Image (cartoon, rainbow, N blue to C red; front, side, top):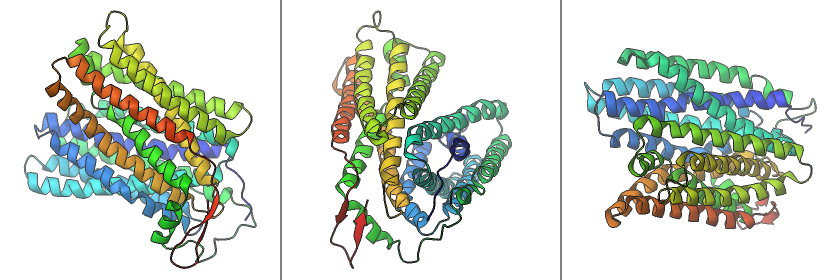
Length: 442
């Protein structure tokens, strides 16, 4: 098969799918959460449970990735996933406005909607990254990872700004109309983004993957898990993303309870954090493109650096609570975002390098397993961070000390992730016992 790598324009086009995913997901995880709790006075645990459910459904990522490995049509699975996500978003919005008059049916339909949202994100996101891993040249993978992250954040920011303006004044009908409009635009944008792009990266001599080359799902999982690299990287993704997501729900309470920030000022912290994330991502994207040499080794070094820097930033954040006059909070939050941005893009670039190094076209199953580890970590991390804080505040009278203890645990998680990352090596060919005569080349 003759394969022509994606150019920069093609990479940006695929990034538009990330923009679409971010645009829809932010309405589901943020806007509907706010509407249920504030406008409808429902228990906060209800939207939290629905968001956790959508993460649980994303554990299906390996299955979607395996399906996309069979044949040469990842475009279909990307669009199928975005379609599921769009339909699920509309159903979830309809279920939300139904809850005040019929709570039971609203919750049941909401479960269906959020299941489609989780499945849609899993199918489209996993397949998109698999396509990038297989079609982006090694020297462009760091920049491609940065573009993918930045364009997802762009979708979140644009939807939060424009959608927030359109939702005022709130009404159930307006909510459904805005969600439906965003979902429709996102799907059309995704169709335009991926239309014909897969064929353009295949040479005229390309042929479909021979039937039977892709093994059954469970055999593919056994093959993948038989690799030391795959196991170590799965553990790395889970541990690092657990530490990455654990501070998500406690940062603003930290600003309010320890620093006395108002609601408006604590909300503005998100701007400092995301600003730092964007700067860190752009720095790594540029460095990975401009610096010559082994990109995989570079991404490994910057991944380790990002983890260690994130641990130090969390230490600084914890120390700020005891020395408010010396250590201002905003720069610490920016530094945490900057370190997280370096880590996130480097880890994604490393993931693409490891998946794209496979000689047997298994990018989908690899991205699926690692994506499932990330989804599980995100679902668990926020919960553990919040409940850990509650426990520490119950055990420790000092509020700054309670927060500092939780931040210290998160920092330890990043240090452990860095140690795991140091053990990661290039894929090697291995033969493992499995049903039939299966040989795995990573």
